Length: 172
Image (cartoon, rainbow, N blue to C red):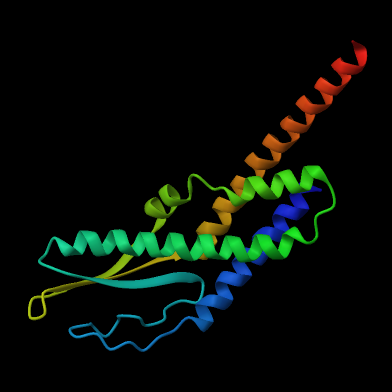
């Protein structure tokens, strides 16, 4: 039962992110920006472009900003997806499962480890670093699937402990 909720959640999350990838396109003209800046790539990846003013050290900060932006995109997608799925819940176990899904303490580390920096440019003329990176949706789906298994086990353990406590109270 929890697994079907989890699979539905992943499907909704990945579908939402895919739709957002199609809709999220901008034509921002930033001085010194390379041709690839803010351009769409593969629809199955979350692309982010960012820039930071400064010398060559600004490249590292721009890379970190790419990771932050991807993390925010995923967190926002979680919020929308969970809100849609929460309506379908019927019992305490399902609600506990969904609440566990909301709090992903490992997300920023996961994004940092799995973001691929594709393009880097430093324009000396305007003293600005440009970076573009992406997160493959397939990698995110794999991560969420593993997470669902862990959360399902945690919720079932919680439910078991709750039942044992109740039985002990009745036995006393």
